[in-house]
Length: 114
Length: 115
Image (tube, rainbow over all chains, first blue to last red; front, side):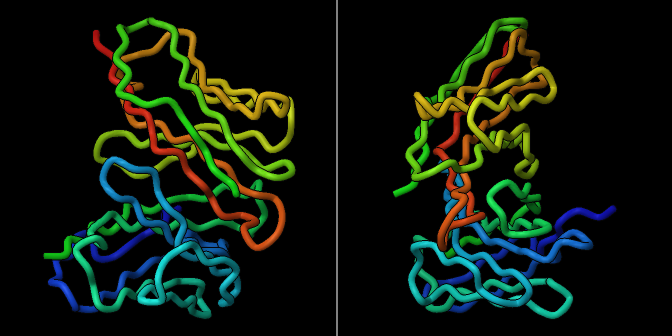
C-alpha cells in the first residue's frame, strides 16, 4: 500500500511570495495533520483536518491556511512568506482523531525562503 | 499547557551498549505517549506507543513505560546497533479538548552508535 505522499519535494521561494503544499493520505485515512519542522527541532503542529473540517489549529499566524478535499487529500497554503518559514513541512494521516491514533508521516516538503 | 522535555543530545554510544533517552511530559489527564524515530534521509516513523498509565510500548528491542507518577516515558534498549543511529522524538497526544489528537513533540535526541 502507498504511504503518505507529499508534493513537491523541494521548493524555493522569495520573501512575500505564496506557496501551496500538497498531501495525499493513506487510503482509508480520513484525518490529515500538518507540522512544521525547523532544522534541529521537533515538529510543531499547524493544523488537523477530519472529514473536510478543521479540528485543530496550532499557534501559527493567519498567513497559514489549509483545506481538505472530498478525497481526503489536503493543501497547506502559506502567504506573504518570511525567511523564518524555511522548514520541512510534514503531513501525517490517521484513521481518526483520537489521542491513541497512530499518525503516519510523509517524507515532507523542504521549503526554502530567500 | 502541554509540553514534552527530552534529554539533549547528541548521544554517542558503542555498539552493544545500553541506551536510555529520558523523556518527561506536562499534560492534563492521561495523554497518549509516543516515540518516533527519524533515520538519516528518511521520514518520521512510529517506534512505539503507550496509551494509559503503566502500559509498556515495545518494538525492535526498544521499550518505554508510561509512568504517570513521574510523568515520564523513557526510551531504553539493552544493546544498540549501528543501524539504530537516528534522531529520536518523544511526543504526546492530549486526550481531551481542542488539542485532542494533535502531536506535541520534544526537540529530539540524536543518537550515534559506533562499531
